[in-house]
Length: 316
Ligand code: NCD
Image (cartoon, rainbow, N blue to C red):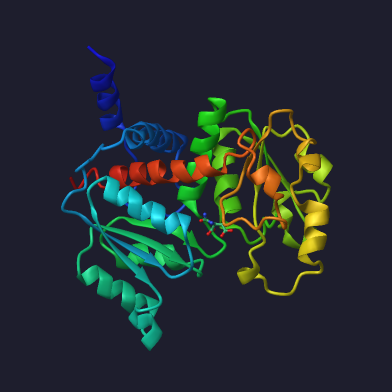
């Protein structure tokens, strides 16, 4: 038997036991591995030009982004289209939310049209859960306020697993605004489940007590295999910061000098959008030997294809 049918047989057996993908909290280690394994299959498929897949043909995905997004929105749309689904994009501009319609009424309206998949990004922490309660199709959380961003954590895990060949035992430092970052919150859960050692580093006012982080970049980055840099979530700040952007860069910005605190070949991740000269120096962001940032974006499409595939398996 050649390798291809074997691979197909393997991917067809992968499963997750949930209707929705709302958080990392409810995913088991086996389910995380199933998503990553299937995503690997889609990475290969996406790199073959002219590859078309009609797996989700006839299905309609509503992609509702009520907060700004470049990568995640495009990536969900790309993933669905690569699998043959039709996609309807919704933003707050141009929707009846602008006319005063409530979020719940909007959800009920969408549900009445019987979509097959629903992706939601919203600034409220309860939004994805609320969507799952009002929609009868699988709901995927594309970021709910400061709470969770599960597909981002999964794509970060896939990026690290592809680079290092494994996740268990890696040392990852998360650097920046941990307090307001749904990316950090989902990643902290995923890393714990997958046996990744995590250190958090950043200013005290952006560090939750539970993270047990440090404000000392040398301590925070020492021995790291990978550094995940986060931007300051200005739109979520309750009060103004005690430092300027320049002061932040001078103390916490990831420069070549600070990267040298980590292991010799340590790599750098950033979920984007990046603020060069604030949380990361441009020379690091653009260094192909150290930066996995573009690879993260590519992995995002494959991870979302895997999630859309797995969540529609029982309905197909
Ligand atoms: C992140 C988000 O929206 O939470 N971006 C993303 O999805 N790639 C991070 C951020 O906005 O800082």
